[in-house]
Image (cartoon, rainbow over all chains, first blue to last red; front, side, top):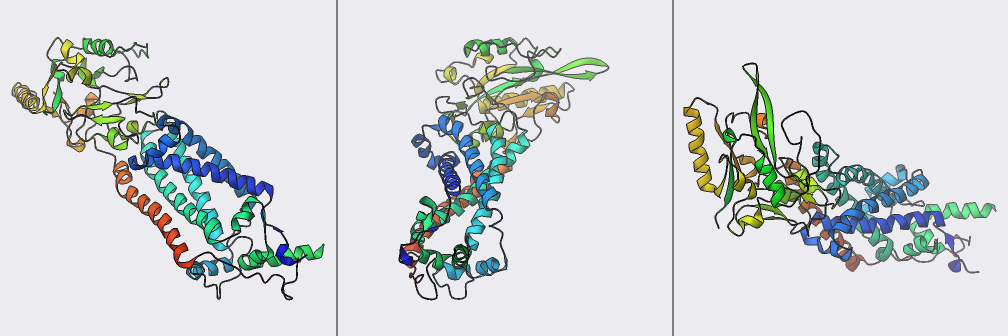
Length: 210
Length: 269
């Protein structure tokens, strides 16, 4: 068999389920959140069943998202630690953005950009959860907390949505075949060797032992 | 259209609570027995189905119990914090005559108005999941009638009319009170919310807290920041993110790779 026909396992079923549970709940929560964030985007509320439905379900969407992200966190937190090479990668990330990868350290299973996204989403999700619970039950929460939450909740959401826009772009249009890694769970060897060389070497070394 | 207002001359209130009854009657609200806390007050606080509470603020004067009467209800601010905070278009409206009204068909029950209100007036109903407060009887005033509470007040403590006129009237009344020896008498029409369309004459105007009224109510700064700069920041991130990634693709295209994995130095897995 030619190497180009080979499939290298990229994400197992548990990882994919957690990721897509997070993705779908994020999409719902972000879009309904945007509906309530600006009158200009309130038409989104009608798309999702009207303002009262959105008000009722948006918090639950957030709860599902945080739970799914929690599954990803348990699975990936260790792998997401930034090492010296990652920091070097981040210093040169402007080169990555313009497809000039000369001198860029080899990426492992996750490159430093993906790691940054992971920590951005983890932090913003924690903030969104806490401030969201405050906004969820306005009649029982102290006013000073609610006043803080109306400011903090959208700020964390802006950071989170901004990161996700780049993430969706990278995972679909910008890096062909990355999407298949998260949908079907495997990638071509050439893709792995090109985008995640260090990880590819590790996979090869591991399979070589068997 | 002239701005209308309600003037509450607290010095004339006798605590008969007729206005409470009129409010319940006109707005067709069932009275739910609340907490009895041993005072003359009907209940301690406003409720989703109780929009107008006469407060018997107890204090001591010359060793004797005395009351500072006040009427607790929506203030119909010129710059309403509830309206600023409301995410549902058309759920809170400010009528041309100055009345701030809740349109319950559009209310989604998020409770942001409760957070935005500097006077802690709106109340969320656990049954209908919508928020309620005094409408200044917008249904009556729109056809030239007086609000129910004012119609029923037996002492002229409550009056309704053009805001400018009532302010003049309140000024004269405060002056009279000062001339009669109440040096601290004055008007409560807080500027922090652009003035209110519910105006009080208070005997102790320098200490409105004694009446249960906030001293310097303002629009919360977190609310202003959220509805101002943060909104701009968010729009920038949203539009910048979508357009930025799109044009990045137009300029740089996808990240292709050459499949060199089957070259000799890269033997197959």
